[in-house]
Image 1: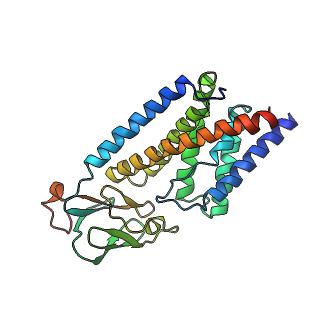
Image 2 (image 1 turned 180 degrees about the horizontal axis):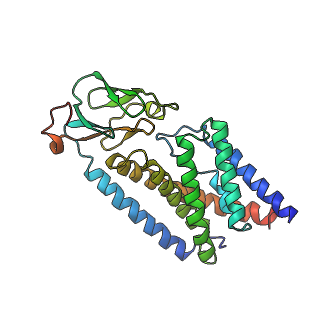
Image 3 (image 1 turned 90 degrees about the horizontal axis):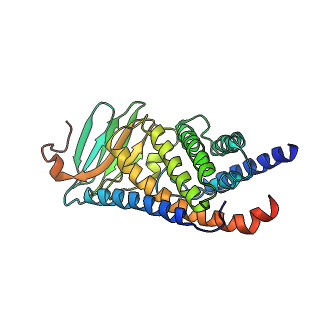
Length: 166
Length: 125
């Protein structure tokens, strides 16, 4: 049990650490990110239950926004909504299809659900056409980034994860 | 967990790629702008501006006044009362249907096709 808690803390820390550095990478649109911080979360799906993964995600959101200086502001709300949507949708899909899919699918579904959550939160501020166009760009890039991250996840899972964490 | 890409993976990739392609086609179809017009939306109003001259405009949002600088077929947020200035950070936008949004001030702006809004002569509705 203690070992499990240590692992949760390790994954939460790793995810948050990557999340902080990810924010330093300049992107052409606000809220568009490379999603590298979700790689440890996706890995965590294979060894943790829903509650433990939820802890990792919540810690990541609070920690990254704390360092960014946007805690409890509107970027936090949008980020939190995206991560909440990510964990609520992706984890059950992963559990349902885990014997038939690789991390590429998990990552693509994760990116899509994350961006969907962000758009839902953003719709509280701006309804209508601009958000629709923004959504097209965000969701399209999310799927492409999800595919790339999923490929990375597959490599990391085979080369590192299976050796050190299972 | 499968270590390599599977058939279901490919099906999921195809599904999401087709969504992207449909979305991009919709986006490109709405993007053809021979004579672009800037549409600025606030919760209460909509404003239209011709992008044929350099000028500065101010728009009143929910928390204050946003300033936009218009150029020839371009625009950018130059000042905003929001704390993080993400809208200002988006820089100059020249592409149609590529919105710049200030969420706290609830002001959004994007370039549209003039044909749709030719009744409005650059000021407001």
